[in-house]
Image 1: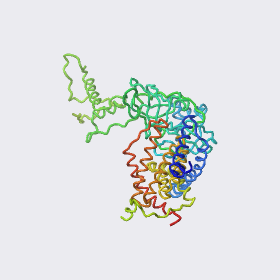
Image 2: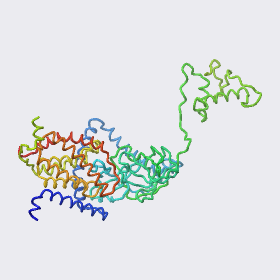
Image 3: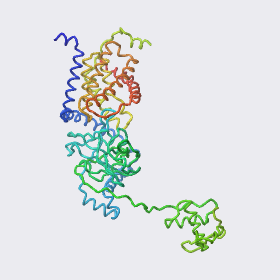
Image 4: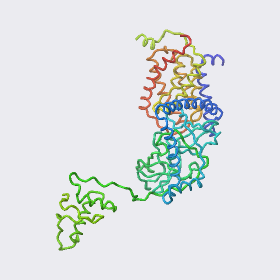
Length: 367
Length: 176
């Protein structure tokens, strides 16, 4: 036996190593548990080094930026960015309240009523392997983080904690193929499962072909997975097409749009209703169209401007309709009435400006 | 040219087995893992650079001992596994095989040839990615896809990085 082992020493070492790892792998898969001790050692060994690197990098970068480039502006920008992030998060949670309440009042209501407890964390490393979408954050069980906790940014959901160690945790991003979360569309209340695709996009699965989902529609967390509180933005639909059994819906995750550096881990969630759609005709101030060249007093343009203020003409066709209507009104002509002929379209209608001034009679209409 | 002929000669001129200090044996793999953990945060495209694999190939080639290659590949693979969200053993098994085969090749060919290093880095990257995919599907039942063309391109890039990297690592040889 010894002779055989000596003769095939290399092969024996290989077989033994593979066998040990296969048994280890089988144990983990079968019992659905992980060999925590080895992972704790590895993460605890790497975290201080990664922190040191990150500290050195950010320290040196900040030093040059602070003292040589943007001494005060950077500090101010940092404060404003922090304020903006806070306001964005509050805005997402309280969108329904903000429709009716004053902004300041709503924010104070949020501060009083919100039960969401979060802890801020910084991303300090990526998971090894080119196909993984897992990152390492610098908060662990020491900060109260546990596996299964949701991670967000002010823009939306980012992922969930898959494993936590004393000093760090692994964060599974929404773009990882193994990620899943229950989501609900804002407009049509379509329920689906958000899944990663392995690249920068995500997809919503298990939506029947008969259900209606539109491009640009927002998806929010449904809260039924008991990981993400209800009402957090997940992303907007970038593409929809019918599949063989279920719809293929691709989503641009809103939480990852501005890069990932700092995230919030939700320690205690707070379910919120999905915000309603914004009003279909939101009042948006539009500047009047520029006047035609050499024709500042063009009656058509004037007509457009006045009608636009009333929420009327917006396109060339609208302006033509408005112009024709004015001609009809001016000449007391009822369009469509039999035996009345046509009005004189060459006659310029009298303009009803706010101060009732008649436009320059020398102005000529646009053909 | 003489370098190439040495690389593919069936009875190569056997140079001495290099000796590496413990700092090089432990520090370089640790740095490679840290590189993969930390650097892609800022340079996303560098995530495709499999530094731990290249280090495994290098040490296995230079030491010319399959048992060493097995143990070295297993350790570096398990360390990678412990920092990922996959079960322990996935990278471990793949890199164990890479270490073994790289060391076996070095017993037949001279491992200091640049062309041989280029070819081996290319081959072992492709083998590593393919075998990892097979393990993911067969053992974990994950529906991950394998894109041969993309993997081949990445293998070329890794091989291109491997040659200068191995030259730098040659400087750690205590016998030179």
